[in-house]
Image (cartoon, rainbow, N blue to C red; front, side, top):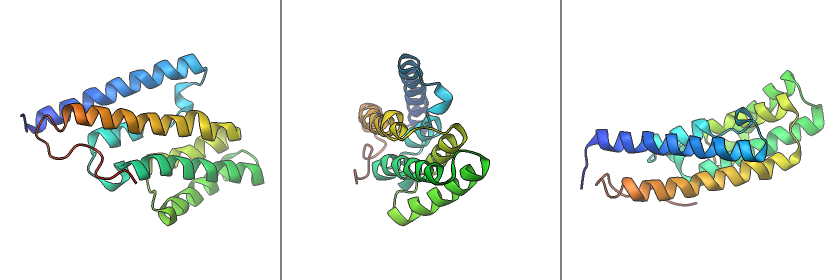
Length: 160
């Protein structure tokens, strides 16, 4: 067992690189530009600070779903644009707090939705599918490296 903090940090960084590479490959094959897929900061949080509450699956998956749904609802009511983006981000923060799914990286979702006028299908692909895939990747990665490194319990602290 290796409880060296440098090993843990390096394993997290390597996991983030692998996840970003996978995200890039999936975005290219799906025809979605990588900048429209809001998971880079989620990857950094979940793999770099797996013990914090916003990095748990409920926050990761729920935060992205709640924030995107808020953004889509605001765009449906107001249309896309900078004011819609501002309102959507503020309401998404409130909604994540109320639902117990606060995940700061998901704050970009309503901005992407409102600025680009994304369709409701964006909620399922790439957001829901991506969040679930990221949670599964983090589970596998942390169990492969974190537990074996003697860094305490593997991710997640709890699923929901």
